[in-house]
Image (cartoon, rainbow, N blue to C red; front, side, top):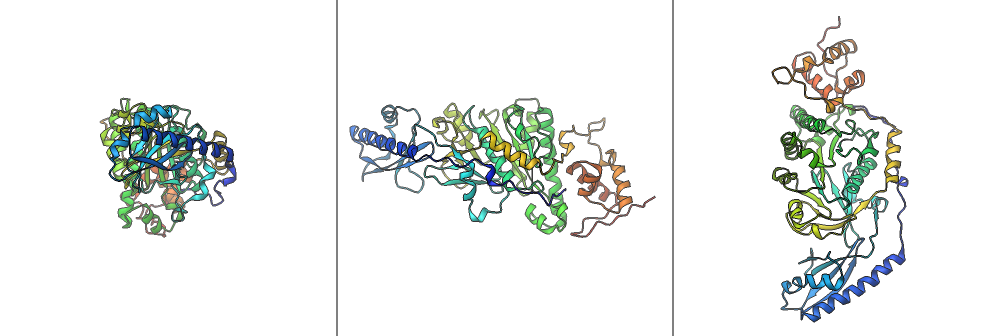
Length: 473
């Protein structure tokens, strides 16, 4: 693997400065006071012994904290949802009973204006214990202004859903941009699958790419199979070196060029993949990756604007416990993505529900906004330092013999060239073949494995070079 030791991470100065308008917050505070009075009037009109005790103003919604008198029933307050919608003149009233960590009911009402949560306002608020994480990204801000972060290595995969215009694509942009600002190309590689051909186009030249952005669905199915093969290859390496996961392997390997990068696979629209003739192959690849790829350092981000059961199948959903839902059309879509109602009441423009393992109820947050100009500045900064080194095997059809079985690596046209090169140079490593033969990592590693199996080179021996048993004619 090529390592550019001069590569610099993009500075925060490339991001737009945070825009603050004190008068806007004062306006929202006045509105919150008026809405609190309306809510208390509704309680009094229907003899509900409850009152608003606090108003938490977030970027897109205000949460009214409602305390119940002793002996009052929670259901009495919940039954007034339609009355509150009418009096507050909004369909998007979401009620929580109880609020997480509080003995109170929460009533969430949209603000008249949404305050964008810009990336620059959150990048400096990373938790100390995650400061060196390469796969950390901000999810959004909750109703009290706290930043919610996501960590790929603990998720370990993410499912994102939302109707058109709800903020799904902006979320994908914020994830990619955050990774570009935290990880160098040899630390994290990305495989981007973009059926729409335009959503991920700004990232076409970043050096973190494993292959060119894939928009052909037939190639996408094949690329996912290649990722599965890479996962299996990594587990073979772990077994040979007596380690359990990618971090243990990279700590064990002394040669920097032999260390493994994390791989993030981003599928911008799963529906286009699942509604093709390759559906079974795609589902099988996603299932295997979501079940096994965590320890191998491979993580999936799967997005769709159609969270129906024919797209998000039970097999896929069962293996991706971390999910984000933006506004969806109805409660059926909400239950498909979150296993509960609520997403149909979101207001759009980045308003989301974030569900992760360990929490009983989804967290409501306002997603991060990244402008097109910011993305362009970040990608230009990365691309100007290093060109992408594509692995062409992710764009190849599976090599097969006439009987349908996979060709052995001895039939790879580069196999004999690799033998000649190693014999002449006395060097045998995956990164060396990549540089000299101009091939991708997976293809080079397969050739190295086959050479070892055939007894032409010795096994990997920590920091030492492999033994060469090829005679130079």
